[in-house]
Image (cartoon, rainbow, N blue to C red; front, top):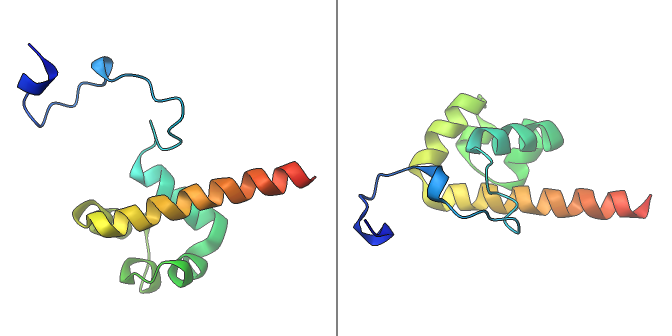
Length: 95
C-alpha cells in the first residue's frame, strides 16, 4: 500500500521519516504550552499572544482544548515557541 492510499487518520509514526531539522518534531502541544507558560508566565503569554485562553482563567487544559480546534492560534503558539528556543540559544551563546 502506498502512502497516498492510506486513510487520512492513520497516525502510525513508525513509517514517518525522521525530521532532525524540525524542532517541533516529537513535541506535543501540551509540552509546548507548558514550556511557554513556564518561561513567560500566563500574563506574559497573554501579552505576547492575545487569546482568552491565556488571559482569562488560564490553564493548560483550557488552552489545549482551544488550540486543538483553532489552527491559526496553534500556529501562533508554535511560532512563539520557536522564537523562545532561538532566544534561549542566543542567550546561552552570550554567556
